[in-house]
Length: 71
Image 1 (cartoon, one colour):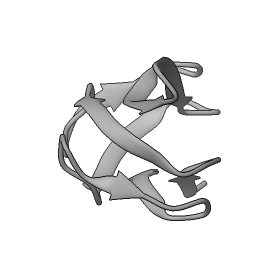
Image 2 (cartoon, rainbow, N blue to C red):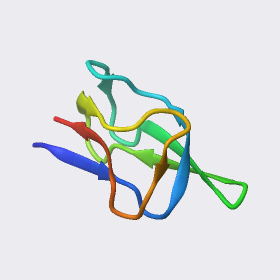
Image 3 (cartoon, helix red, strand yellow):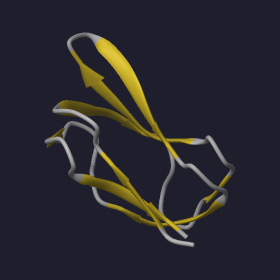
Image 4 (cartoon, rainbow, N blue to C red):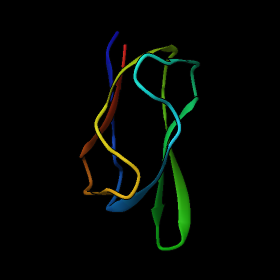
C-alpha cells in the first residue's frame, strides 16, 4: 500500500524526521511543520518504508503539497 503524506496547511518545514530508506511504524512522525509558532507533525498512517521525501528543512509548503511517500 502506497501512502502519500501531504501538507494539511501552509507551513514551514521545521524538521525532516524520516529519510528515504527508513522503516517507519504506524503513527511515526515523518516531517514536522511549523505554522503560527505551532509545530504540526505529519505522520505515517501505516507502517512501511519511506521511498521519497519531497521537502527539505526550511521549505515552505502549501496545503496539499507532497511531503513524503511511504510504501
